[in-house]
Image 1 (cartoon, protein in one colour):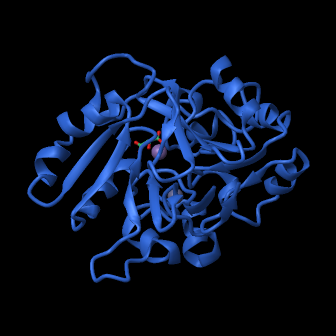
Image 2 (image 1 turned 90 degrees about the vertical axis):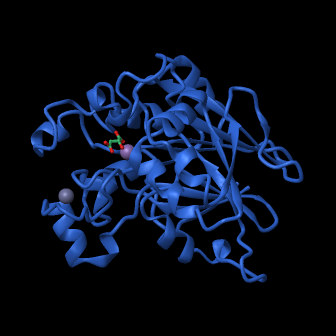
Length: 298
Ligand code: MLT
Ligand code: MN
Ligand code: ZN
């Protein structure tokens, strides 16, 4: 299984257009600190790739990745579709930018599909431009494409819905999911969870079986949102378990055999700066921070 990291930042990106915080100012001054919105490209088969989440940076992310460029035909693209972990705007706004395609797949859970169709009205808006094939993302592993060797299923994470969908739909825990991607020829698997509100037994089981885990690294600690004045809520209250502290994820990840990397870093997170001292601490626990353009082969 071959994956390419297309971005590692939380909503807003790094720098965020209207933000002059130290993280964003630092990223403006030092281009190596820039991070695009969190996303992956996953090779489903020879010349067929799926994007995991469709971010506002999707055009640049496709253009900058050699494997995702069009050709040899004038309108032939290796991008076959999008897999969604949730319905948040930083993970879905890029869908409209794919409208030049003849058609593409979207794999999403029921609540996510209903929010995109009912609240964002993406179905009505995009129907005159392109053909979207909606596919249900469920708890049953199924081949991503018939000809390929990658299987996919979703591990429910939480009922946290986007602000634009307040009051919508049911309280199902499939508003936010972790993706499980498995290479059937080797049995090796990866868990991708850019938003993790709670560490459930089911999630623990999933990561114990995985060879690689790419996890929500939005905030370093639970009080970071209040300390940096971006929200009165805790990180956990915003649907993102922090990395350190009593309910921190680092402690849990460091007990696993899997290769573990953090993604979806907010611009307030000290780890967003590759030169920050917190990286050494993370290294001592055997953990990493994902970088834009990183290639992962499983
Ligand atoms: C999140 O990750 O919690 C959301 O993307 C926040 C947002 O964009 O409003
Ligand atoms: Mn987000
Ligand atoms: Zn900022």
